[in-house]
Image (cartoon, one colour):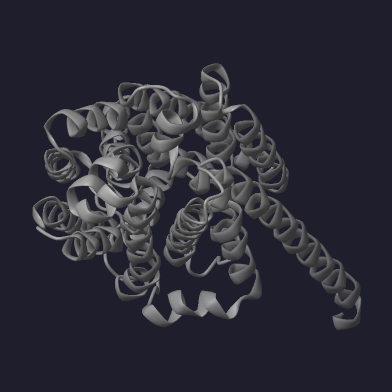
Amino acid sequence: MEKLTAGRRWAALLALALGGFGLGLTEFVAMGLLPDMAHDLLPAEYAHSSADAVAKAGWMITSYALGVVVGAPTIAALTARMPRRRLVVGLLGLFVIGTVASALAPTFGLVLAGRFVAGLAHGAYFGAAGLLAAAMLGPGSAGRGFAIVLGGLTAANIFGVPLITGLGQAAGWRIAYLAVAAVFAITLLAVLAVVPEVAAAPGGSPRDELAAFRLPQVWLAALVAAIGFGGFFAVNSYIAPITTHVTGLSASAVPWVLAVMGVGMTVGNAIGGIAADRNLKRSVLLGFAAIIAAVAFFGLAARHPAGLIAGAFLVGAATLFSGPALQARLIAVAPGAQLMGAAVNQSASNVSNSIGAALGGAAIAAGWGYLASAWIGVALAVIGLALAVVSFRLETRAARTAERAAPALV
């Protein structure tokens, strides 16, 4: 990598974070506009039952998440030898195409297809951009590098998602997604202008990247994220109807609730990036305990405006505190396949998105009420914490076994 001035380095990091900002928009705007999308794309179902239509519209969130699950490991394997900036530029182009297709598609099925295409690039972008950021910051900066890219996503939730949600409510959800596509196009130009080229890992190959899946700890760490983060997505996917139907606020309050959650995510991410580089294990375990407590509080308190606001902040902060730690954890357990490890974390998080949205929607459709999604989220986060404990204990046991066996090899 070429030597960078401090100004150029921070400009490059901001460009990569802008991509995270776009990802935050494309992923989370759907939550705030879900009732509008359901009304437009599923008019017959909405006229019969708005709750059923919103639950079905939740498949737009699930479709994007499935695109991430498919795209992240596939792209990571196929692009193992591609220079990182070139990969990021290609992924941003795919975001533009998929987001424009989502905005212009005339039917519910075609919108699902567009969301799937857009999701293909999500995990690989976070992986490649995070590795680029870490390389520019220097050794031992994996947590901070990914926190910077995630910082764009959290910033999106403070003002980007509320603004785009407000735009969508006023001008239509399709206009909102065209605005998101414009953000991706601007990011692409910024990356071309200021981000330096960084070579792929020496000797990297599709075989080396795919070899990560032979490691049990990779699967276990991915499972921790896939199930554990469901606590966040079970709440966030239905934040709009909870705000209006449960708390009793107007639709104009939804962007403000999203903004508060975004502030929480930003605070949690900033602290979490530093904490992950200091003590990875403690950050993972503490993070999941915080998610359980925050989602439970939300489920108990969200009927009241103050409880809704406080709960939204706490859920966002607890979840994003865990984000950099889980990203660094997957890279640590896949040392020969860093891009795959980084991408798999995003696949796992979006499996969690899919699980949280689908189970939350099923609970709502069953007539249990919108807040039932929060209690589904608590259960998912408890399982995630249990799996994390198992993962670390197995790792400790394996290290002790290796230590005892070492003298016999002398």
